[in-house]
Length: 239
Image 1 (cartoon, rainbow, N blue to C red):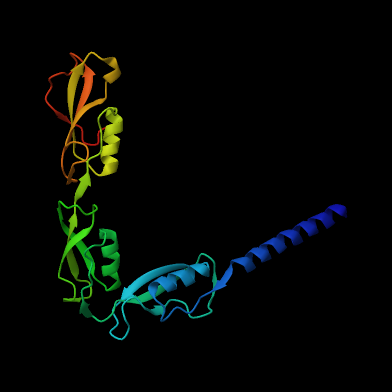
Image 2: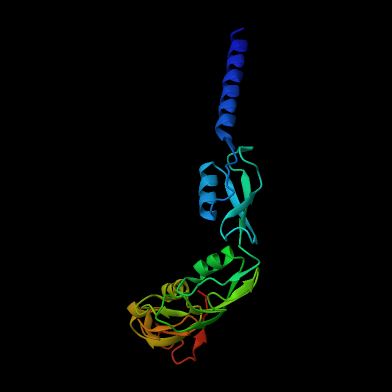
């Protein structure tokens, strides 16, 4: 009898926990039509929902404003459910936004609000941060149709870090992390064991600002007589 009582109590306790969990996981669809995209994402997230954005041109609604949602207001949902929200990109044809001065990622996001795409067609040397949009075509204000492309020129310049005294593997890792993928190794003989496998010199020099496609040449100390005088051997991301 005692065992039966304990079993019943256990089932009741488990059932109570499950009911509590179900209650806590419940939520409902908020009313998002007319909200900006940013507000819609924030409100939906506060309700415990995952907000997915799709875009559609609408001549009667400004770009960036919600025009449809996949579930009506107060529709019962569970936390973690997906609520699809349709955001207006404005009229079928509209003026190109200004994306110069933005990072490439920010420019892509800004263009997407209007239903445009961004294509980076050229990198040039610049004192602006890497990836900054320096020019765009069409220019701001020109008319484009939904889905058309804005071509941009971006800054491709990076500051060369200091590689000297690093080990070969450290230097190659730093080059990759900095954005330089073309690294050439030149071996230089020495009898000083403390210098083995370390960078003796580099071209370009530390602090120079060059395109990310520039080849970095590293002179690496090796034991004298083992590779000294060999022709340069490219080691692009081999370490």
